[in-house]
Image (cartoon, rainbow, N blue to C red):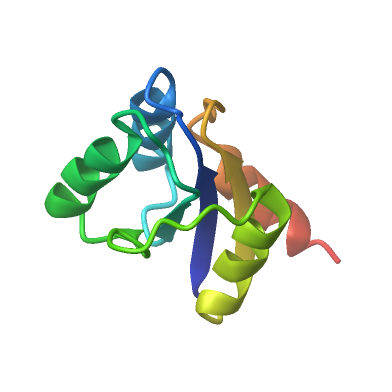
Length: 111
């Protein structure tokens, strides 16, 4: 089962680290976090790169071409980037409870 977590970022340096750390603490450990930055002018790209260097599950998909698409097209680009069995959408300023993935996946298996 392949799980892709999709995160669109834009000038999110204030909250981004906390959100990525909450994803890393998930009880389900087999996931990919795909991040596309939408032209940030703050330290968001550097924060993403630091996490991507230390965790192979985290991928910065556009470090060299951070054209501003707007949030809808940014997420659409992430969905099309790679096929997965499950997709989770993450805002840059969320903080996830550590069992978010596990509970959602368990609920999906009920149907």
